Image (cartoon, rainbow, N blue to C red; front, side, top):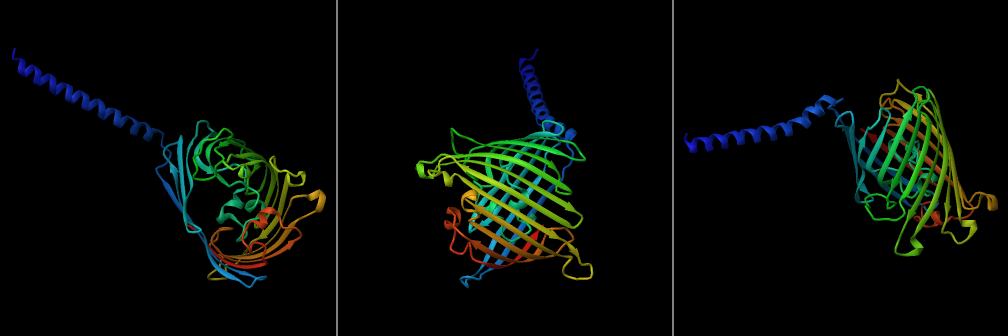
Length: 355
């Protein structure tokens, strides 16, 4: 027997065996994913929001590119989904807003890992494309510790006619794009009943802890809130109340910071117009205070708006005109720490495009 031929054949056998094994290992995940795949489609979305503001008290004006967002989402298979969203210009800075993977471990539940919205704020407050007005309500602007953070969110839903959704999350507490180490992770819990299409209400709580090198900058807050939303055809009514308890506040009067809003809108469809599909008048009252029982409301505001819809979808792409009138009794710490024009009565012209 020729040993050279035997060695050559053995070498060939090992080569093809190993090649076949590695090819099988590479092909098997693709085959398994194909068997479980629900869809190969992915979705690209975006929001572009630009506005002109006129401070009626000061007489100052400015143009502002408020949002320029691009998002990509889709399903890898029936068990795994993804979402990525970036802000191209957040006051001149590039920000990663969303970057998470959702694992659907149960039929109606799963876990979301990465950077995402904290399950506490309402989507119609923090998402520009779903807002009734050019500017957010006080509870969305001054109360929260940031609408997004890095962490994990578990969720489970039941029911079809009147759905219930339970969400619980644990986060770093460093807000977006800050994967910091911490001994006190932030915790959020929210129970939502119903849907935005008809009637929805939710109760929620959020314990936010932000450790800092400077003790004066440390935050230890407990938020609680509740909201309702009612919609019947073209009429929409929404309300929310939120309280923030500051464990580090030195004065008892500064421990509770309370806010609320009530807003409503009605969509008038205009098929006879060429440019606009609808006209939507909206009105909002919102308020905030540090001592509701002691001194009443520190600040409240009335906002009246008129939105001209560019598509047939409600609260989508539109040309919006808003007027805000402030009633300031005591400037809160949050209001005083913002820019000089934050409490100016304003006239805002906004153009919002959603794609």
